[in-house]
Length: 381
Ligand SMILES: Cc1ncc(COP(=O)(O)O)c(C=O)c1O
Image 1 (tube, rainbow, N blue to C red):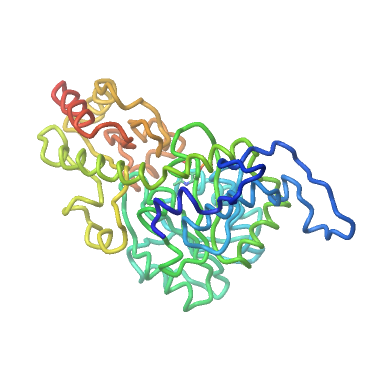
Image 2: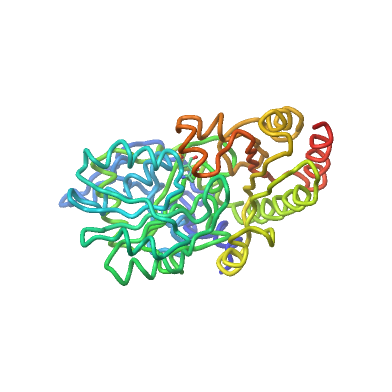
């Protein structure tokens, strides 16, 4: 079945409890135990084993094309739990050199305490992978589309390289979403998301998920049980509801973002536009072969430097000036002063986050309205 159908029907119980078409929220934390029930079969919310969690897991797994999934209390809980389920003290990790700041901070602040070592490598340059690999390398971690320059690495080759060397490949698929890319089909072992973003799509909850084979997700779930990051029932309900429109939202966002990227690319007030759907993006050919849509995120530098960038953020009327991404409403931000403000200037500039960079998370508003709004804002510069 196609993603639109899976989003609506996958995981649904038919008939639903009491005949309900919509799977209800079971706010209860614990369920009655039949005599002889094994500890691992107890239904308790922190163990991610309740019926409403199983329902959500089935929907998430179907959308990513995986055998199993587990929902987590945040995207970062998904990232850390996925890694903790595989890595042991003494293991080494290869990580893409442009990671979401929280994932980067987890490694730089906690790897040593866990006895892990790591090296950052360029996901577009396989020679850097082999140079950094050690006999202890256990995980190769990348992102499907990186923030904020929207680079798309050699993802198929990452999965192949990992398999060839007995390394577990892990990918953060938050930016691409399963509508534009299903990394398990490229050979990745574990996919995780900040479901706070596109999967939920309404900027009203924090959640995450990990998807993969049944044995790998069993290991993730056991790790989650120990670290305590299960997803609250009400947030789980909202996430399942948001997922039903995922395909529609993401296709609208792909199309709106491409229109805005094309507007910017042709506009004299925009110096540099980063969107993998544009033919002059350095990864365009690879993105076109891997992705079925180029996503809803883009970044650019207005001519006129940081002052012009700040003025532009003030001048748009539709996008909210806010970090985060993936909601139905457009958001605009200068990563140097919001999402990446915690990094040193040197580290920021190494990954392309200069003070004049503006990032847009494009929503599902009418395309012409978005184009008209950005045009009037550019004309004010
Ligand atoms: C690519 C990516 N991964 C992970 C996360 C972490 O997600 P959360 O804020 O849900 O913990 C984020 C948050 O911005 C993100 O952008």
